[in-house]
Image 1 (spheres, rainbow, N blue to C red):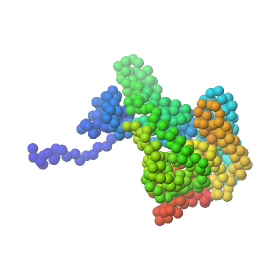
Image 2 (image 1 turned 60 degrees about the horizontal axis):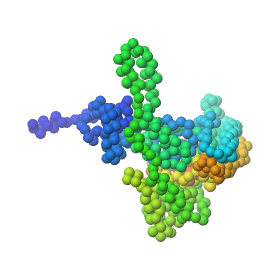
Image 3 (image 1 turned 30 degrees about the vertical axis):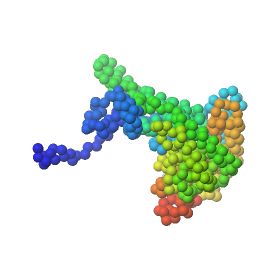
Image 4 (image 1 turned 90 degrees about the horizontal axis):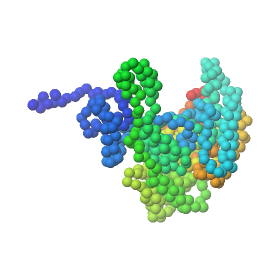
Length: 528
């Protein structure tokens, strides 16, 4: 055969692209993985693959050979309903995660209900918990109505806007204020689409958590992935089979196609268990932080602190490990660690590594070296929106009342406008939040199982939480522009504005290219 004829026979100039629908997630993952081991097309691979063959393949290559990238190819959709806001924050704390949660802006959470922990024989804490949650919800309802009335007096409806649209828009702004009163016990719902590798890590992380609800959530996720999935076509398929009752063969064929049992990840997630590396390291780092920072008062810190890079990578790693296990500002810990002898710095790093098993990924704190580190102290409600930025490394501290709370004073009408005061709701708001913080401390000191964890549920979203965001310039630009926009919530709009201002102080030339919206200027409340 001539070289010319060989070239002509093997030329393939027509690229083919087609979407694939209807394959089980693990079967599809196997079919895609076969591209590296077979010349078959996707159509041919799927035609010959069964769920049993996929399981055999995955048992060999995923678990025995450790080819974890295969699990990236199996994507699974979950509905997670009636979980607390606290559990939701823990659940979505993944760097590879896609999903949506119920919005505190567009939905009234009075109908949601709330999570009730096990208080055992501690009837006093049980009663205080119920009373505190009930009080917060009652104040949430009163504040929503009062702020809506104040907005209706202040804002004039444009003639072109329908009354129902006007009211709905202002109600969303009222929810923006009232949501500060929602406790972490409030039930929410969310949908997530994750690949099987992320799911395995997520389940393991949840099973390792100190809060009982979160551990139970990990079990339910694993059961949902390995057990029968809800079939959106099941009801229609059953109806079709009834119509085909006179033709058993055809009815059986329809059943196999439309109502067969599908298990989305029966193989890839079945061995997910609590992570000893994570659990033991968290305990030891918390002890180390308490010992090494003993007697040191928590320093005051701004809303946003862009901590300039002056330390070595080793100091950054040690400081980040201690930051996540404490409630101190990053700058304060970084400066303290930078003054330590090298041996002491390395001792902290060793704590973060010594329990690591053969297949354990490094803790998130080891994602070090980013050029920009923003230490943010903000209300939990606003943080939940910032938490969605997955292209950054987030080191989240625990829930606590130590940092006080935010009051939704300025809003979107300018820093001189206090909507709560105009609505006559400021004093009651402050009283409710402070009573909840006092109740949390009392419950934590009780005798209930996991008393300290149960106490977190009564903390309202107004409570401040600290998180370290590490990123590059492109992500800082993106967050500053997106989150400062007029349609956003005033809490994270202020954070995005302060991120930009901090960036402008340290890198003025680069900051000129950020299209930020000035938070200090009033906006049109009817703009969505």
